[in-house]
Image 1: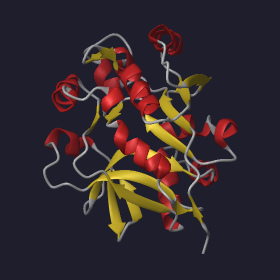
Image 2: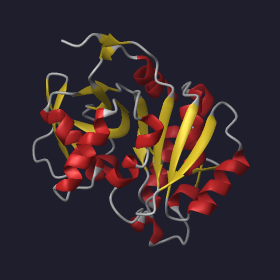
Image 3: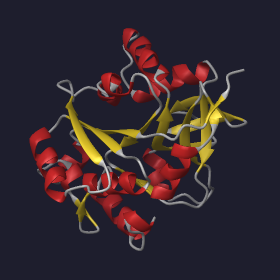
Length: 251
C-alpha cells in the first residue's frame, strides 16, 4: 500500500480552451467572458481558486485565446501567479487540453478545474490539503438528492463502490453522484489520457475512467457547498442565484 500524501497542492490547471457551442448560439463571444455577478466567468473561477490558496494557476487557452488572456490580465488576479499555455487543437475534446499541462505538472500533484464551472473556494481548499494515498487522484462529487435539475440534466455522472469511483460518464444509466469538474490528480493522468487517445477517446472522462479501472480515483463529497456548470444563459441565472451571496474571497 502506498504511503499517504499530505503535501498541499500548489498548482492548478484551468481548462479554458473550448468554444462553448451551446452558449455561442445566443452570444457572439466566448462564454468565459460573459459576466456572472459582475465578473467575467473565467475571472471569477480564477479568483475562487486563488482564494483557496493555490499559488500558481495554469490556464489552457484555445478559442478566442487573446481576448480571454487580455481579460484575465486586465482584472489582475493578485493572490496567485497566472500562467498561460495554448492548445492549438482546442476544437477537440477536453482531454486534449488537459494533456497540454503535462510539462507544467508532470512531477507533482495538481488541481484541475473547468474554466466554466463555479464552486466555493472552501471545497478546493479542502481538496488541496486532503491527505490521500500517494497514488490516488480525487474528484469532488455531489451526491445530494436535491441538486438543481438544470445542473443534473447535463452533468457528468459517477458510479461509486464505497468512496472509489468505478465509472464516469454523461450517459450512465445508474449513478450515485455528479461530477463537479473539480479534481486533484497525480501525474498518472497524462499516461491515462494518452492511452485513451490511442483508442480514439479524447475526453477527460476517458482518462479518469482508466484511472478508476486501476482503483486510483476517489470521490470526495462536497456536502452542501454550491457549484454550477455554466453552459447556457439559463445556467448563468442558476449560478447567480446560487452564488449571489458568496464572494470568492469569503467562500
